[in-house]
Each structure stands twice: as C-alpha cells, then as structure tokens.
Length: 307
Image (tube, rainbow, N blue to C red):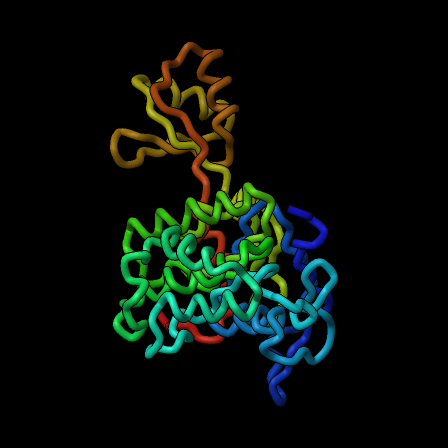
C-alpha cells in the first residue's frame, strides 16, 4: 500500500448550514497503518466530516482530500475508498448479491470479488435474499462487504459494530486490525467506548465541530488519568508505615486490595523491595477510554441529560 495515496488530509475544513457551523476549521491527518477512532458527542461534526470527505456534502471552506485528491476526482472510487455511513441505504428490494454486483460493475471490479467479500463478511448463504429481509446486523455486514469490494487503501466506517452480535463484533475488530496492519488507512466512528478501546491505535476527538484531541489512545488516556497504584500485600501494616514516611497513604479497596494515590507502581515496587515487604500484585490504575473521553468532552455535547 502506498502511504502517500492513502493519507486522509483535512485542512481548515468548515461546513455551515445557514447560521449553524457544523464543522469549524478542522485540521488533522488520518495516517495508514493504524486504526483511528473518530469520537465526539452527538452533533460534534463526525458524520458531516465524513460526508464532506466523500463529496456527499459541499464544503463551505477548506479541503478534505485523500492522497491530495478529492473523492470526486476518483474515476473508480471504490478501488480507492470503501465507506459505510448508513447500513440502511441499500435498496431493500434488491438481492444482496445484485446490490454488490451493481457496485462492482460501476467501478470495473471483477465479479468474483462479490463472492469473496460476501464470504468474508459471513453473508454468502444470504446472497439471493432480498435486503429488506435482513436484520440490522446483516445489513451492517453487507455494508462492510460493499466497503471492501474494491480492495481499497482507505476505509471509512461509521458505527460498524451497530447491530452486530458478539461474534460479529469480534470479527470486525480483527478485520480492522488486519486491514491497518496491511498499510491501509482506517477511520472508525463509534459511540461504544469499551469496544473502541479494544481495536483503536489513535484518536481524533471532536466537540461542537472543533478538534479537541489528535493523539495516540495511550497518550489520550494517560493525560487524563490520576496517578494511582493498586496492590496486594501480606503485610499492609508495615507497608502503610513505610509509605507514611514518604507522605503517602495506603487505602483499603475491595477484594483484599489496596490503593495508593499520587504515585506509580514502579516507585512502590522499589520501595517495597528495599524494605523487604512482599507484594503479590502491583499495577498502575489507568482511566478507561470512556472516563477520559467524558472528561475531555464535558461541556461540548449538544444534548446532555441532567443528573
């Protein structure tokens, strides 16, 4: 895969609907070789940004390109970019295979790819069924099959796990990791934080149309985590006294564990080793992606429930 031709480049991108600015001078890159999570509250501008990138909406100002080219400049776009924005978009009266075959013909993609992607997506046995009979999960699989049809270097997926059963979620997780490992650019929008954390390498976070974060997932979480160590020891009395000398407090937690705030596991481990205090468990406690995300986006949600 050619990294230069697969890079998504967003430069001062702006979209206005009347007096509403849905996307506000966004600038970021989505690079190949990693899965990038595209996060933000409802109304943050994620779907609008994807639509602008795919030429489905007109840009007010700025640019959204793939390898320096606008999507509308590709003569056979499915060979370059695969996208799933709305699993319900496929015509319900068509048979699944015919839907994919029409896309293949329009993009000069060999018909054999239709069978390959249906097999890959786990819907080969439903090839002759009409799409209106499909469950949401099956429509999602069909949409992903369509995105993979042209063997593209760039994938844009909006809520790809929506409606999938646990087996399907594991499948899409492994698929996205593999596609990125092959050097493709993978941008995934999702509201499921726990699931997103299981396969994303990098994060781009929006709030009210503006860029809030563009960083690795590890850095994103670490920057929003309070230093805390979780541990187990058979001699908490001596450990408490030792920590107190350094101004640290050992606090009892659940399941025979203890916590210490304001310190890292490496420091506690060195201290315990020096004093000969046995430790059966010792780890840094980090915030979850959901906790870090909520911390960052507080105040940027268009709609929020009161407590």
